[in-house]
Length: 252
Ligand code: SAH
Image (cartoon, rainbow, N blue to C red; front, side, top):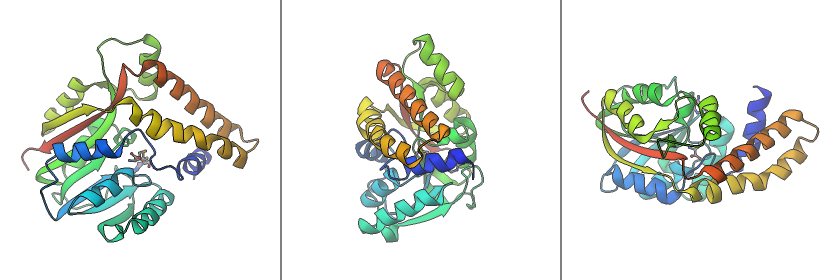
C-alpha cells in the first residue's frame, strides 16, 4: 500500500468518524428518507470508515447494513464497535472499492454514503450506485457543497483544485434529477459537524501521530495540510459545507 494511505489510515482509524457529520444529522436524513417506519431494510453504507453512520442506522432501524470500505483496518474498528454496542448481527462488513461493488442490481432498499462519494465523484457515483437500488429505493449521500453563489476567491480556488466537482446544492440536485432520481430532501451540515465532531478530535490526534512517525516528512505534510484545511474552514464556514442529499430512484 502507498505510504500516504498507511499514514492516513493510522491517523484516522482511532476516530469516531473520518469526515464531517453527526449522529443527529444521520437521523434527520433517515427521517427524510422515510425509513423509520419500515422493516427488513437492506442498506449498503459505502465508504463507511469506522462506522459513524452504519452504527446509527443499525441502532435506529429494522435493517441489515452492509458496511463497505476500501480499508479493512477501518472495518475491523467498526466490527469491534458494533459488537460492543450489541449491533454485531445487524452489520456485515465488506472490503471493496466503491466503484467496483460485488452487488446484484436492484437489490438494496437504501444506499447510504457520508463524506465518501467524492472518491469516485458525485455524478459518477450517483449513476453507478443507482443500479443497485430496487425501484423506489433511496440514495442518501453527503457531498461538499457551496452554500452561496459568491465566495471568497481563495476558498473557491482551494476546493476547485482539491475537488473540481464542488458545486451549489441546486446544481447537485440537478445532477440527481438528470440521472433518474427524485429529490426527497436536502440540508446542509451545520458547522459543529465539521469542528466539534470532526476537526477537533482529528487535531487532538495529531501530536501522537507525529510522535509515531517522527522524522517522516510525509506525516508532517499530512498534519500541516489538515491544519490549513481547518483554518480555511473556520474563516469560510458561511460559504461551504457538506450538503446531505436524499433522493428516490425513479424507474427501474
Ligand atoms: N462515512 C464515514 C467515512 C468518511 S471518510 C464517515 O462519515 O465518518 C471517506 C471514507 O471513504 C474513508 O473511510 C475511506 O477509507 C473510504 N474510501 C476511500 N476511497 C474508497 C473507495 N474507492 N472505495 C470505498 N471506500 C473508499
